[in-house]
Image (cartoon, rainbow, N blue to C red; front, side, top):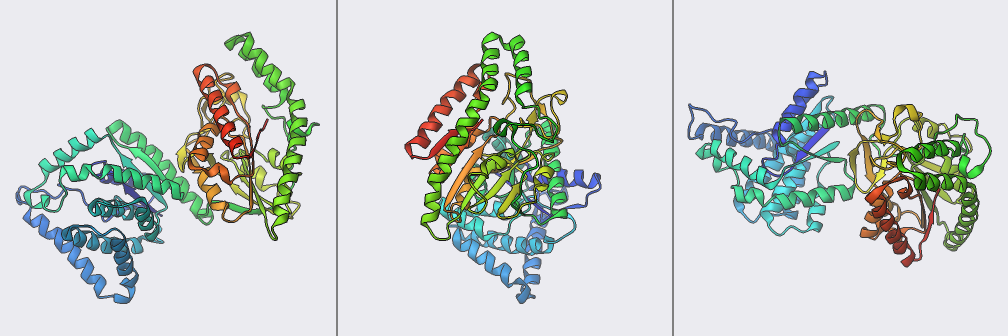
Length: 530
């Protein structure tokens, strides 16, 4: 497993990398930091000018490149990658062209040696950082050239972006400069040049997220934040390592289309053989009674009324979905071999799939079921019965970005393991309860917009159901901002402003209107899911 850090100079990459390595080794996990160098670390009273340290630094590079040249067949790909990367973002300075080229060659060699290692290999800076450096000294790098460069280089299992406020970075850089020997300063960029890299690093981080790379952003400003960031990084690293150990590192698991075990009570009526869910009509009324005490009569009446009229809304929704599917069916039949995709965001144990697959049938549609609650995933896997299509299960949370976050829900006394109201938004249900973390560690998130853009090249029709407990606002705004909503044929969304209070509720209601207007302006079917 390979971990790669990147960020502006003095963000703490080397410090963090070594601290993470030490933490992992103390926990019994074998980890190494590779190709690491800390400016000022080799200063010595016996070498006040830094000449000996500088000579050793040059000698290491020459020795490694000479060793590579002695094995031209093995090194051909490494030389080719270096040449292509430097051609894409050529530095204006010949000095930095040579320096960065030799560093990329050395990096290629260490990266190849690390690939497939049983250890957790940590690079405090590697290909992403090199891309930032090339862009800095190129001075005219565009997003297109950065995208091209990022596409050339090998990918780490986890990319960690470290950052800090500019004033802290500047203070650290000036202190570093004070500690460096005169000879060592010849190898380092000045403070102003290093600070100029901050917007480039931000651009690269944004592009990585758009590409769907496995990356997170952390900061290490003081011992306390370092400790907190180490906890997050350690948890994510171990989760990724365990996941890779039991299956290929793919983003989703293809399964056969199946029939659900448990029907969707709110839509289908009747009783289920599975245990009753907390989000049934009875429990909603019970929750509303608590709201009466905490938030007053008006909120109590609102939520109680919503629960009582749910069967009527369900019947209307059935008719609307049937009509939507029939209209969209014409588009599929008009094109020979056309196929649709249905993305169910917030699948829980599959209730939405059972409902929608009656109308968006598996002979014409593939399904993606998205669910971050690991307690629900076995239910989705258990649905492998009646073949006739395909389902992918994505064990992550739909979001506006790729990364990791916490998962929230009601107090333990008010939920079962497959509770329907889990959310990556802490205050998603603040009218009903005070949310708390319901998982140990973080859950992985992915950009729904990026997924849609990737799938629209494959499918002729894309339909979405979104019940993500308050996270829908940021996701929908992101889709609209990027124009991704135009790729959809229909979307069914459950908004959650009715479960919020105060200014949060008012703001969400405003977003709901804007979102509906945006979809309506494009003549895209937009309906409220319940």
